[in-house]
Length: 139
Image 1 (cartoon, rainbow, N blue to C red):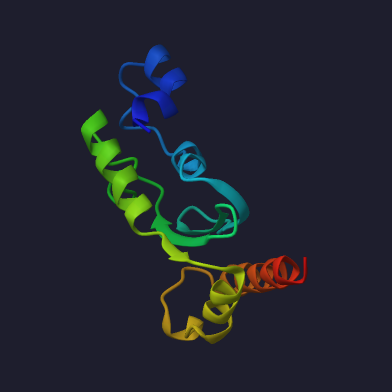
Image 2 (cartoon, helix red, strand yellow):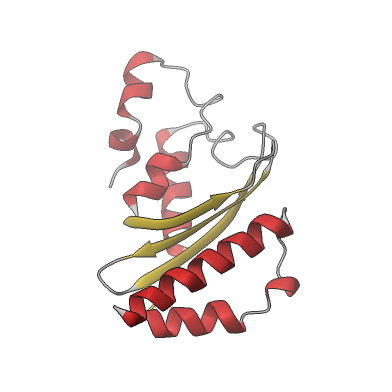
């Protein structure tokens, strides 16, 4: 989906929205059904998302900041920049062919070796994903 449609309200009401927009949610929602999302509760951090696309599961994690110097969306200066960021995030989703495959990943991945702004939020996300995927396998 073109980002102009995702941010239609902002673009219609403020021609100079690029330096101040910081809401990733329209972009994230455009990639599919979000079943779990855990965002760090700070001025900068990470967002972690689990998607369910009819039994195919996707994981996305990315960092964001509080200003245009440390946040990719706030640094965008044109629709083309926002579209490029959206495309990059979409291409970063790691897809799994089944709940079992996704569950194996969440259980076996070296989470401690990954960078995460908030380890507590990371652990919460992994736990929620494991619980969700186990229920998906049972049902």
